[in-house]
View 1 (cartoon, rainbow over the protein chains, first blue to last red):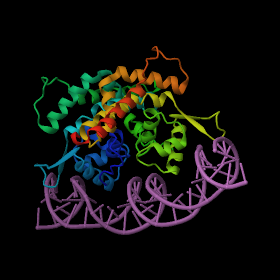
View 2: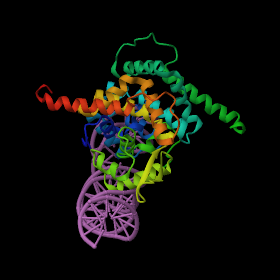
View 3: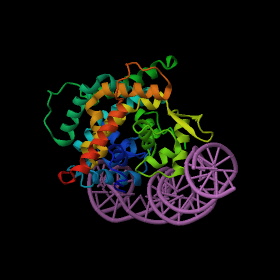
View 4: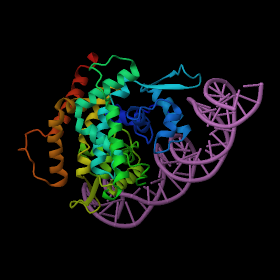
Length: 173
Length: 173
DNA sequence: CAATCCGATTGCATTTTGCAATCAGTTGCA
DNA sequence: TGCAACTGATTGCAAAATGCAATCGGATTG
C-alpha cells in the first residue's frame, strides 16, 4: 500500500510513488482534465479504472502527500480532491512523458494533440499551467495576470478542434 | 506481457511501457550503470530483482523496441543487451524523474548525487550523455570530440567522492 | 575434470488486480 | 412524503502478477 523503500535512489523512489498502472492516470485526469470528484474520475478516464482501485489509489496518493481531500460544501457526501505542490511539479514530467509517447508509441491523434501543444509551449507554458493549478488547488494568487484562455482551456479547445475536423472531413484522416 | 492499449493517450501508452516496478530500474542500470549482461543486471541493482522477473522484462523491453540482444563474441553463452534510440531518448525523463525525487522523496545522499549532477548539467549534458550512449550501444560516431571524462565517468566520480567523504568524516553527515 | 559461471526456467506461495455487486447516507424531484 | 438517482466507497471472488528458492543444460576456467 505505502512505500517500500527498496533503495534510496531517486528514480527508484519516484517509481515507488507512481510505478503502477493507475496513479499517474488519476493525476493526469486531475491535472489536465480538471476532475476533482470520485465519480468524475471514475467515469472520465477512457482507461476504465475500477472503483476499488480508484479508492485505494486516492488514499495512497494522500498518504504520499500528492493529494488532499476536503468536504464539498455544496453536498454533504461529496469530497473534493486537491493537488498538492508535490503533484503540481509533476507537470514537466507529464509533458516529457507525453512527448516521448507521441514519438515512439501508437498514440491517437485526438488524444495526443494536448501533448503536442504542451511540448510546443515548452517550460514557459508549463510554468503558466502550474501557476493556474496552484491558484485552482491551493488558493494561491496568480503570478501572471489571468490570460483570457487558461492553459487548460487552450488544451481543451485544441482537442475539440481535432475532433470537429475529424467529423467534418473523416476521409482525409 | 505486452501492451494493453487501454487508450491512445500518450501518457497512458508510456505508462503501459514502464508503468511497473522494474522496467525503468533495468533501463536505469543499463543507462547510468553501464550494465549490459544478465548477471550484471541481476547482481548490480540494489533493489534485488528476481531472475525470472529480469528475464521477463528483458524479453518485454525487446518486444517493445527498447532493447536489442546480441551474442557476446567473447563468450558463447553470454548475451549482450543494447539500448535502442527509443530507450536512449528516455534520458531527459530519467533526469526529470531523479530531480523530482530528490526534492520530494527521502533519497539517500550518495545515490542522489548523480541526479543532482544531471540536473545541474541540464539539457546540454543530457545531449552529450545521449551522444555517448549512441556511440556505445548503436556504434554511431561521436558528434562531439570525446572529452576526457565521459558523462558516466563524471557521474561515477561524483558518487565515489560522496562515499569517500562519508567514510572520512562520518560524524558531519 | 571439477568448480564456477551463463542466461534463463520451473514450481509454488503471496500479493495485486479486475470485475460486479452492494453499501448506507444524501439529494432532487414529484 | 416517497422514491429514484447519485455520493464515496467496500466486499467477495476469480485471475493475473510477483517474490522466492531451487534448478536446468551448456560453456568456461583453473
